[in-house]
Length: 444
Length: 160
Image (cartoon, rainbow over all chains, first blue to last red):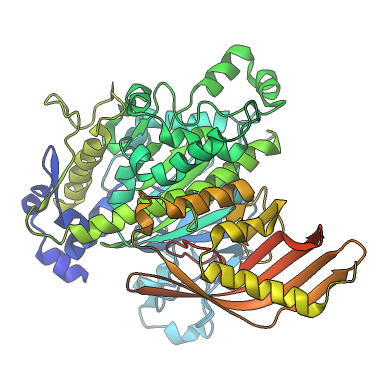
């Protein structure tokens, strides 16, 4: 549906009424009108992960990606700063990058009419430019060059951008939730990460928010993943006593942990819709030690600090609106909205600079076993999302329930910890959804 | 022992595909050597399965987990079950070492997977690294390179 129609249904109160304290109207997942409003307002007024600066190490390096559904590119400018530009030629709208990533040299050159732009987006040259003399071209949109996304913040290599002038500045938007990124980066003895290990892309015929909610839903693993983790446990019990657990078994087995394990792991919410599971421990707590790694960490940070960093085993940290990271295994997933009922999931991994390769090997294996389109864990997650997308067409009940361990004292924009099986982060997500949907809506 | 013929190598590849189409997964896993691997790279011309991720890189234990899972009553994404269909070109013998009894075949294939009303076509090349163990051909590595390995797919449930 087009923006005009989205504007026509733009009644702020009607939209906000779709989300109640403990239930969410099905239209929030199924309506293309709501989806268009999300793209127009929510994804514009929030800080979105664009890429990691290790992907654009040298001047002219670029990646092409999206914020919401809008094409953008991230590029290392000649002055070494990282720029985010809207990925369309100001002339006819042609996407300016040719590859998903590459090096453009000192200039972007449009493949249609050879308009050229510097790597900060400013205009460089137009062939036969005398054709624009005395036409008032200087005042046109086209003369401004590639439009930059104005709000960009590079946090320890993680580059975020905000399209709209509305919404909080970066430090206020993320607040203490940045501690999860800190823990991931601090796990490198050098305090640096680089994108490594390849990317897995998995198409989902469901709404993007179902994936975000699932990241902090701790009552599903032992049910939806009984088929994979439960079978692993069954086969593993038949193995000879004392046999060392293979890495793959270490990865699968914790998915079958009992409810009590997830209750006690705890959950923490932060302002603006961020939150994480695994305050005290997680499914990543009991992986085998990697030889030599702890010694490297002690040498880099001292014993106490090294222990503190490695003792923090958060499970899933959700960054509003559509990113999840796993610090202990250096993984980031982004749930890219395509339409109300279609989402592209990209799962990206990082190398801890100066750490043993065995850590990257485990990270890469985890990504393959859990997040690939051939993953036996991913299959059962996608199955339930797609069944929900279909089931929500039923009019007998128009509401999705998010009430588990609800407390009437809950408020938006607070920091709090509670029982790990609470749906408090899902409610926190929807409180932020209301805030950022209406924030710029009321300004239009 | 008499060297294995090209026809016997090709026949092995055809029978292996038929086992998959007939979903005889336990028998299929027995075709692999104890250290055998099934690999589906995610990158074009990928060389490393360890420090670069893949769609699948499974040892025998992981293959057994898959086969057991496919039989499970609570395998919700396989209710109802998927079916599959292979069409193979004649395998080409890329390498033959009769002393080591070590062979490599290369086979272009179209693979169809269906579930409910959806039918998905994949195009790929399968490279079989075969060895003879106690007189029987076994798979040391089956590598399946999708022509669009880096595309975003929905769920791939079975084996190509």
